[in-house]
Length: 473
Image (cartoon, rainbow, N blue to C red):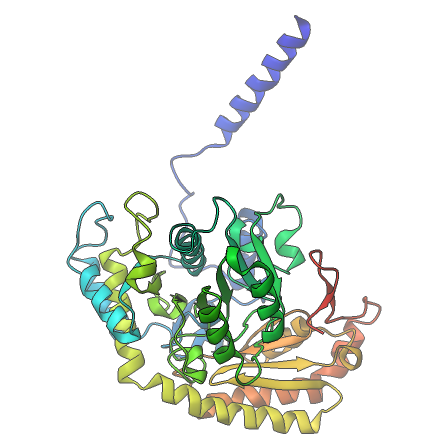
C-alpha cells in the first residue's frame, strides 16, 4: 500500500511539474528593434534545440544569390548551397514571386481534394524528365521512403516475391536520409548506433563495383526488388563511379528484373553539370527521386518519378502525405524548374565546375602533401586532405578558417571538404573561394596545428559496424 502511494506521489509530481513548465502565453516581449547577436542566437539554439547538428558557428540573417550576411552585417560566400537545395541561388526573385503570389491565393488543400496547381506541376515534371507519373512528397528522405515502398510493392505484386521477403540492395557509403528505413541500409555508425533494431531486407555492395552487384543479383535476384544508389555519392565525399558503371547497372537491373532507383536528391537538377547525374552515361532509371533544389531553397518539395507499371502498384490509402503536392509547393517547384532552364544552370554548372577544379588542382600542386585529391563534376566538388600530413587538424578546422576568411563550406568524414556553391555564383566569387582555401593552407595551418596540438590524430578511416571494414579508405 505504501509503495502504491509513493508511485502515485511520483506520478503526481511529474504531472504537476510538467504542467508548471508550460507557458502558452508565448515568449517574453523583446525589443524587436535590437536584433540578437550571432553569439546570443547560437547560445539560444544550443539551449533550446536538440543537438543533432554540429554547425559551423556562423548565423545566416540575410541572403541573396551566393552571398550570406550574418546579424552583424559580415558578408560570406556560400560554398555549400544548403546541400544543393539552393542551386538557383538564395532568394531567387522569380521563385520568391511565385511563392508570394500563390501564398495569397491557396497554400494547402491536402490530397483529400484536388487543387489547381499540382496537376499542372505533375504534367510539367513528368514531361520534363520523361516519365509517366509522379508521386509528390516534401523532403528528400520522404522521397526515398516512397521509392522503397513502391519497389517492395512492385516486387511482391509484379515480380511475385514471397510475402515479407523483398530485398533492397544499396551501396556502401550511401546517404539517403536518416529515417529508420534508410539508416537500416547505412554504413554510418553515428546514424545507426543506438537506433536498433534496424529493419531487415537490405543488402550492401561496394559503390562502383558492378561485379559485386551482379554476384548479389545472381545469388538473391529472385527476391531483390530494387537497387537504390546515388549516381554521385554526396555525403561520402563526392565519390564519382568508374566510367561505364551506370550503364552496366542499367543492364544488370534489366537482366535480373530489378528496379533501378536513382537518388538524385542532391546530385540532380543541374548540380553535376547535367540535369540529372545519370545523364552522364545517358541511362534511364526505373525510378528517380528528386528533392532539395526542386523547392528552390524556399519550401520542401520532393518527388518520385516512375512509369505506370511501377507507380500504379500504390493504391489509395497505401501511401501519402498531407502536404505532398500542395499548391504552394507546386507553384514554387514550377518556378524553380523555370529558373534552371531559363538561366541555363546545367551549362553554367558544367563551365564553372571546370573553372573551380582547375583552381583547386593548382592549389593541390602547391600543397601536394596536404591535398590528396580534387574531384567533382559540375559544381559538385570536394577536396580530400591527407589525414597523416594534416593531422591533428581536421576538415572541420579547415572550414572554421575558411569561415573566418568569408567562405562557408562543410566537412564530411574528417578529411573532406565539399565545395558545392549555388549555381548562380560568379567566376570572381569562385576565385575568392579558391584563394581563401590557398591562404588557409599557406597562412593559417601552422597556427591550427598549434591550437590542435595534443588532440587525437585525425583519421579518414571508420570501421563499419555492419561489415567490419574500414570505409572511405
